[in-house]
Length: 259
Image 1 (cartoon, one colour):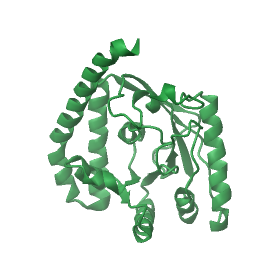
Image 2: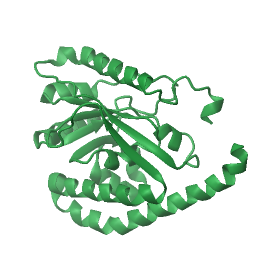
Image 3: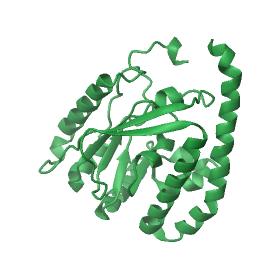
């Protein structure tokens, strides 16, 4: 049956890509103007433009975002957001999910894409994971941003989870920054981005729901650097359990069903 619908899905993917590019080009001059206002004011303005991009794009391509809150969420407070990373769509859905000033940490490679790369590097903090000095500089920038009461977001798995387990092993960065800045951690789950757009196939985009779950915050008050590993494990266990509870579709999926 999927072969019958494949031509229609190809047309849909082209349709979605056209709107992606058109909206991006329309907003690009405003991003350039905002970039002159510095990392904080300009960065906040650029992230709001990214929100506008998401608000226009997703209804047009029939992807419907639903946010679920397991505990009250205070948008006026800075958090260390940590999210699972399972899809090409995860980064695109962020401005729809997080409606407050925030800077994600993202791979520097994406900044090389024409036009999109300019917006990308102005809206987030880039990191070159292969360069220790660059990683350290990125962490310093994130700490500076948090000191201005702006949230940051990490994908602690570092790259796409292709294991068909709830999560991949976490890196330390998010948890070390949380402890050193005494900023609470707010786990976020992307439940449906895997079904909307697979990490290995840009032409696998499909319309439908995208649920985003905000879990209860995890305080770090009083923790010290030696607690990084135990905090990382605690967050990993909480997120893994919740992904199982919500029956995330990639968990236990066969390789053939993920194609």
